Image 1 (cartoon, rainbow, N blue to C red):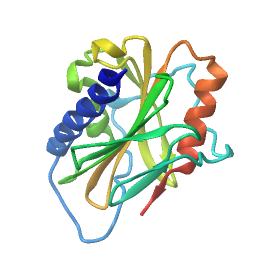
Image 2 (image 1 turned 90 degrees about the vertical axis):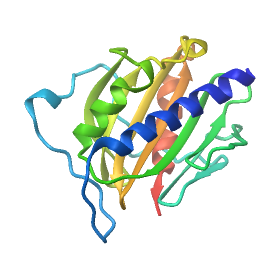
Image 3 (image 1 turned 180 degrees about the vertical axis):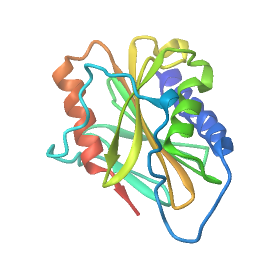
Image 4 (image 1 turned 30 degrees about the vertical axis):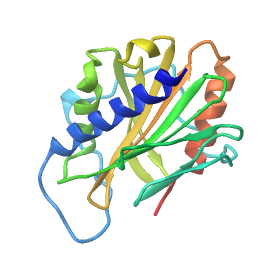
Length: 198
């Protein structure tokens, strides 16, 4: 279980570092990059529902970066991180982990970030893009699929990301596929409902 709690956060940090290279630009005011339309970036429809905005917010330990924060589900524990670009929490029974990352950005659209993230870290077609959604009122891309780390092959991956205040922010959920679908949805919706920009 120790390997599970360190592999994905490291992969997330590496993936986030790649996202920094996604574009150039800047500005002095906090902003989220608006979704752009392009034929090649059309999201693939899926049966996976988007987060329910009316879900009760998670109230567990807080993952906190300079521009965003999110609560873990009740009963989960925060993992000690040695990398300042991410904070991670995990289920003590090994049924999943959740990572919040933040890294300086030089711009880039949601489409560019989603494409780069979908192919980073050896994902190679095991991740697909769902329609864009929002985290606390800010447009974000939404990816689902299978984590690339071999020790996570029994997990599902769900990732949300955007540029906010010149920072690439990602929220990554890796949850055990064996959990009932209602439980997977509940965890995701509660975590997403607790997300706030700072």
